[in-house]
Length: 96
Figure: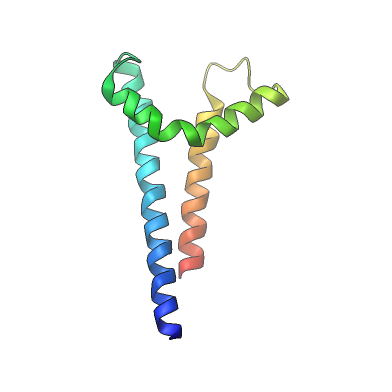
């Protein structure tokens, strides 16, 4: 019976890893498309719906602490990308 739990666990890690990878690509697409498309674009709107729940906690934290408010770049976006990368790395590490 232990083998079944190990298989289910590894499948769960794999699904979580691919979800994180998908979100990383969605964030990359959002960043690139935001330069070329209007914010009211359906594609960009869809990407914002997907990625904003990851970015928003960082944005709120930085606003509350008054960090990076005068920066020309959206640092909350960059921190969210780093967070996803770290989460993917840790999943790979613990799944092995």
